[in-house]
Length: 215
Image (cartoon, rainbow, N blue to C red):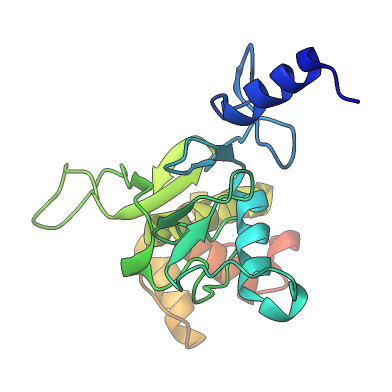
């Protein structure tokens, strides 16, 4: 027979507030038992999840064949909290650095995605030069970027990683005009900054490491 004290404890747990788990550094994702991290998603019910965890859970929710005993109906453009099962409108934001594919009912269509962050990239040309982009975005290495500016930053990182002493020699021994002339001779695009032209030419000419075509 259950003691009255045990019943009272059970009742208090059942009726008490469903508080979010935290530690001295902030909230803890109920699925991973770790901090939600960059692009963590806080649902209206107050529970905070890592993006990968809530993405996997929502993807599984849409695959009804894998959850034959799940009888709760969740509207197409809503998300259910895996912890308290509260349903809220709005899909997950699109975060291509973590999941490149757009999946209907999970992170697409964009107009149904819940608000996340706004791209803060400073525009360097055009009528809005000096202003921030302002498009819907996500966090990447601590920066709020839209898909377009994220792709640009990824490309720049790859270019920086590919840069070598051979690239330095080619850049120092050529002007932008001479680089464009070389590229034109090979039928390659001639747009971009000097570094872009050097990288493009180096990628095309296998003799650059020996310095034979760097003049």
